[in-house]
Length: 166
Picture 1 (cartoon, helix red, strand yellow):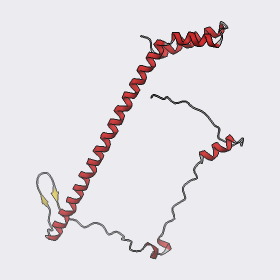
Picture 2 (cartoon, helix red, strand yellow):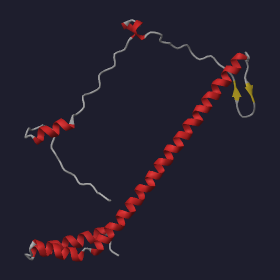
Picture 3 (cartoon, helix red, strand yellow):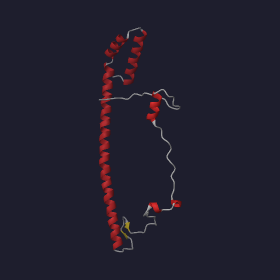
Picture 4 (tube, one colour):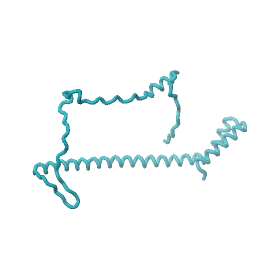
């Protein structure tokens, strides 16, 4: 069986030959339709593969979402247990490490950090002004301007193709 690339080349060569022979458009269309059954079969087989790959990708995405939810639940449970264990160590005033061959457990003091009680009361000297984000292109406005006949330097309208499989 021929490849899609080979079949495309054969149909293109036939089209060019018929056109150079002076055939009218209807004759060319009828001839190409009659010769394209293998090409059509190849396209439909490839479309089936694409749909199968998309279905597999969707299944993988669903599994990723399920696993992400499970991961978050495990992380939350571990965090809650760690908080509970720390409170227990602090309440019991345990000041030493508790360890075995695999790991050690102890309560330690974190470095000092700032707790903001009222952000509006903080003097300006302690505030940092972040730079504004760079401007972004309004593609809809550019498209409307070009469609209305206005020249927009650095831009042009293009039309691309996409594959539709239903």
